[in-house]
Length: 88
Image 1 (cartoon, one colour):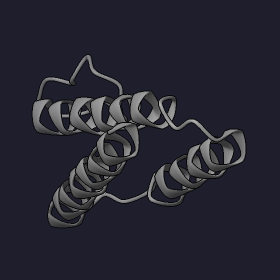
Image 2: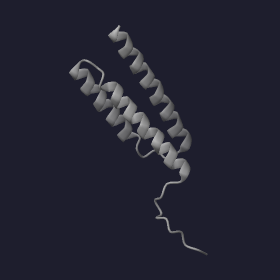
Image 3: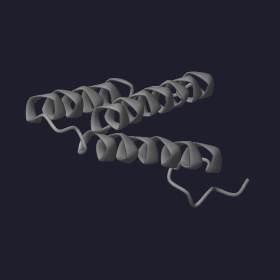
Image 4: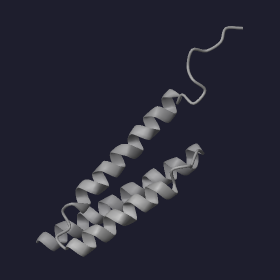
């Protein structure tokens, strides 16, 4: 039996791609939050986003992660719509 050269904590390709989706979602949420005009609202939303991602950091089940990504995208779209309405 040949020993693997990879460390035991190495991500599979599927896990790596999923992780990239999560990081992209986090960056997009933070970019949208930067557009919030009120400082206190911006800080609240930034803290909320950070806590949500930290709280779900240990999730490992594929279906759960996929569901959370979908929810995050829906919340991002809602935030973007709200910001667009506030600008008009």
